[in-house]
Image (cartoon, rainbow, N blue to C red):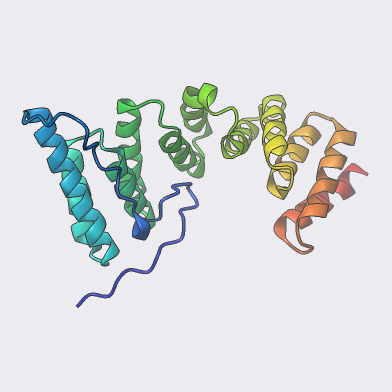
Length: 230
């Protein structure tokens, strides 16, 4: 008997459903008129295949789960829960190109999927293709103004592109939603320093020192920048 898989840690790329804890998608409403037609039949088959994949995954049968999730998408490409599950598995096993393709196809079907956009942007950013990352983020920016995670990622990408004024605005927006994030304040400090806004940069780096442990990478960075600015 195969041992159940251990719960996986959330991907650093931002997929918030770890592979070993796939959530089943909501059951179709029982109040709907039951129709036996091709569309309904395909939807039922896709849902059954997805649930089978979720069961296999939670039993540690990863290869079979992947096959089921892929079969779900073959039946219904718009099944986002199956796409997310398969992306998570690809990322876990470092099959980045496969994950990227799935995300691109998912966004082509639903450009409003903020989570897919952010994970795809992170993939581009990790590969230092910051222009591609910014293009993806720009496509969902109007729907993501209130997201701290989005603003922090946008700030990082803009900063890497040398667009420090815009990066600082994104980091400020992130700081309003997450005032205790040392990483956000460090990003803000770097972009303020790059613009010659010395006093504001100093204040941002002081916030970092107050928020993160001594000896951590962020703390060391803040101390280094403060010495250079004083």
